Image (cartoon, rainbow, N blue to C red):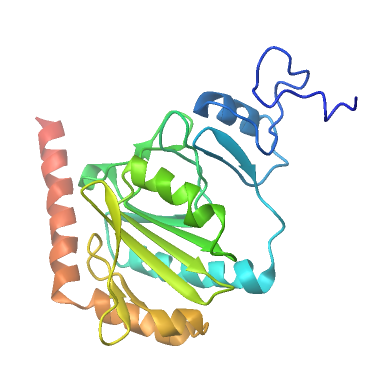
Amino acid sequence: MTGAASRSKSGGAGNVYPDLLENGAHLSASQFLRRYEAMPEVKKAELINGIVYMASPVRFDQHGEPDSLVQTWLGNYAIATPGIKSATNTTARLGPDDVPQPDGLLLIMPECGGQSRLNEKGYLQGAPEFVVEVAASSSSLDAHEKLDSYRRAGVREYLLWRTAQRAIDWWVLEDDEYHALAVGADGILRSRVLPGLWLDVAALLNGDGATLIAKLQEGLQSTAHGDFAAELKARSLRRRSGESR
């Protein structure tokens, strides 16, 4: 029996390589993070419903370039909205069996009423408000197991770009269930959770960054976004005032 074949996927006492991550291993969140930290050469691994998933090589056209465009969109929104942070490929501990590493995310900062925060090791603890995944297949982990993971954890909106199918799915959490966000008659998806986060679907699918950002700028100039930014600022001021007493 080879060394690889002799490893226990359950992570039990019979595992002769207890500090290694393996695709398909069954682990708790704590076990997963300990092993991930011990393998700095591994750039992306996730724990979904207690099962380890290791990343495959990334194609330029199906993931690398689309992911870059999404990050530009998210980053522009965060820069224009004090109280919002964006991040890419960030490990998030959502629960005892779920530690995904979403391609992109937006979160409301804790002092502004957000539902996630950094733990003592710098990992996200709890669900960010908005998560984005870029996937090449409609039958991928992102469209099924990971969708359930985000729903269970309370991620309020989840955007999945299925690049091979040239399709965008955007779900909103309502009564513990995900429901599809309806696209407007003008072809624009508008976030319910993060006012002003507008997505020109055609521009994203066509890789038209200029149009994508121009439409986002319209959202950032909307009254709804202005009111949201003011509310985030007010929450932060109330929090600081309470702490200073």
